[in-house]
Length: 240
Length: 203
Image (cartoon, rainbow over all chains, first blue to last red; front, side, top):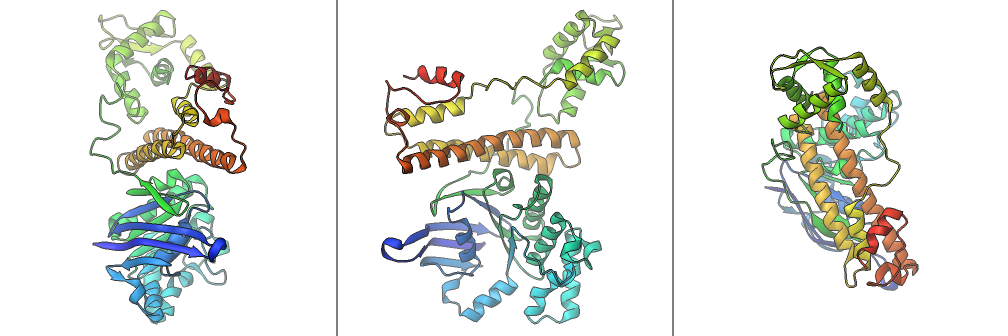
């Protein structure tokens, strides 16, 4: 089943000669358990695509479906619930609240959604443990490394029953080894926990963790990768 | 990849038979560089001729002979490890040539040419990343070898990105000369001597 569908989504800002087309008739489908990367240079529309997919912004035309439900027909309150319960966001600069511990940061979205504090904390500790941060639960963001902060942000994006993870340059602030660790976690969340992820990045090494890479140029999807066949690059005799 | 020096390195661990050297070479390089038996025996013969290894002399074929490294072999290996490979002259790069040529062939959609190569490279990178994910977990040699391949492919994707941006900017600024766009007969502005020589072949 498709967890996320964008059907000919366009987004423009301004009018007349000042009109800027951020997205032009973009279609994208991400099935449950899939990891999709969207690659493009600065200004190609990657972040706009993600904010529209995450219902933070409405498209000018076209439709977004989350778990098969058209978002445009939902009320503002219903969209807000969707964002609190189904969608998790990961940003380049982590966006953790500095005055809260890792566990408090992770449990916050659940508590905002009315989950009792104790229950939210248990869920937060479980999410932190899944990302190898059990021993950092009581640490504040400034007591953690960049890689740990981003892992805490991923825990926050996955806590509870969230099924759709949207990540905007999630490794942009990290070195290559920590960046890879973040992509590996997102990949594992899709393959082992049934999450669906859309990751936008300009970095080919990070995008290569995805099942499918879509290329965005000037607001349009211009191309996408084709999944490889069963033959491995390591097949004996292939290089001889 | 210097098979010769890889063989010397494996022999620093102690005497080994030819067949075992081949197996260990492939295992240590993460099976990224497969080696045929003939290459192994020819390499061992040359190393023995140059006094860098010695054999026990029994058996006619490399597979049955046991080889050990000599003091000269150890010195040669130490010298090789610290000698940077020659990267001073740019390699003849077919992809660079294709983009340069695409600029000069009238009616060519250069962005589409660049994208075709970019997609192919990213597809290859996806395959290497799958190997990293499933085949290379816990295998440090294979992880390092796959990383090297990923960084190499990534650098080409980055060059394509930069080339596309530079071409777009030149077109927008009007600084693209007829030589950058037109067909045969014009001078190319390719900066590298070897590439310039290559480009001339296309005129």
